[in-house]
Length: 276
Image 1 (cartoon, rainbow, N blue to C red):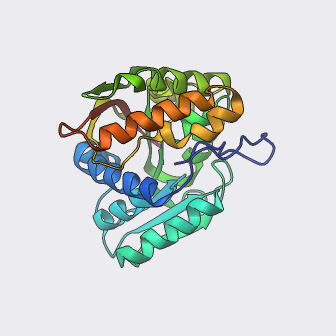
Image 2 (cartoon, rainbow, N blue to C red; image 1 turned 90 degrees about the vertical axis):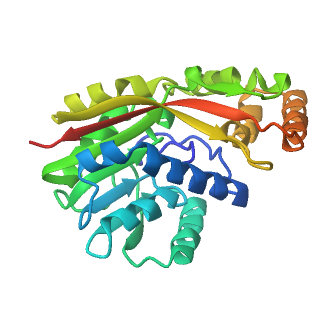
């Protein structure tokens, strides 16, 4: 999901900060495959299974929507909700290429999804709350209205301050901390992953799962982390200089040619709450 605010119309919008390029779509697809493998137990506990109806709110290019659609099968359905037209265009491409017919894409916001209340088995939101500082509870409260009795809200988010890298370039050492500070200045919570269970509880949902994982990814040549995709917004905010961006870009290019591939470690928190 991009880092534009994804809340209701009454909330001031931040500018779009992650361009949905072909490289970004490739990264989303790779991360979706990792998520399915790494979260299999939590997804099953939440009810993501054959025949389930799942709302993927803030679906971005719909890479995860497609993977979830494969799990729920032809008798199930995935409703992908996204605000940004650029991301929706990419999502339509990804869904069309998948050949799946059980994914429906809709334009909507995190608090006005357009999904019928009480109509889905699972309402999922991944990596959106970290970009909506101050609105987290209102968003989770809305997600709770979408699920049927016995249904679950499934949240995934991170702790940007806990990201690590192995065999990276020293010139990139300050990119992670600068990116976390960039979000903090925007009013976002870089550590929102720590609060997922509390947000679900405050929405009246009973605990199903709350786990912390490390997303470990060896980056292939040419692929960039989301921190890099936010460089233009960081420049506009004064969180980075042109010199910083040039230095980081050169460091990534040197990494592309490295024989030993860099590995990135991102803390990931998964929480699910059930509507009684």
